[in-house]
Amino acid sequence: MTDPTNDTATDTAKLVELTKDSRFVMLTTTDSEGHLVSRPMSRQDVDLDADLWFIATRDSRKVAHIRANPVVGVTVTSQSSWVSISGRAEIVDDVEKLKEYWSTFAEAWIPEGPEDPNAILIHVDAETAEYWDSPGGRVASLISLVKSKATGQPYDGGDHATVTDL
Image (tube, rainbow, N blue to C red; front, top):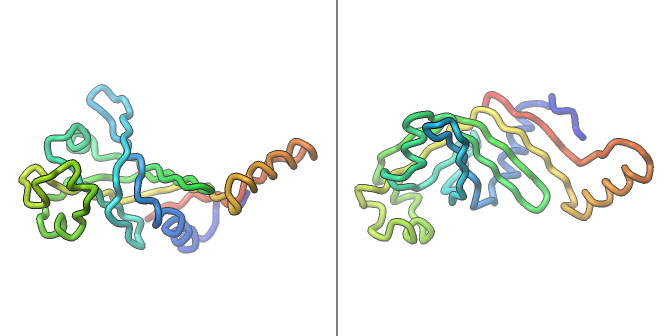
């Protein structure tokens, strides 16, 4: 695996590249009893600073969790990569931004549209992230695992880095 102390700018660019095409992610919040609660969310946008935007309803459990404890986790996966993002979430009440991000996915949960008073945005400001990228996907990973078993050498699963100061 790649040394996890790589150049931050390069790792941030890699992080954005690994997550940019993943429309659905898992958003993890903490409930009032301290339990982690994860749910699938449709991501609206990611910028070069790895900030994430989601459309939600004001009266949802996830919004209540964020208001009580804004520390969240976001998990993004693809065929060949895994990304874990830790950051702080905030509830944003901005109808114009809601209109900008509005989609048919959002309409399925909020049929009244972006002007619905219950519609809000969740903005996640990513603080740290860790990624694992296995170029070549599952087949390359399987070959590396078999090679490791046959040679007795440790598994080399591809690129790995921890990115801070996002």
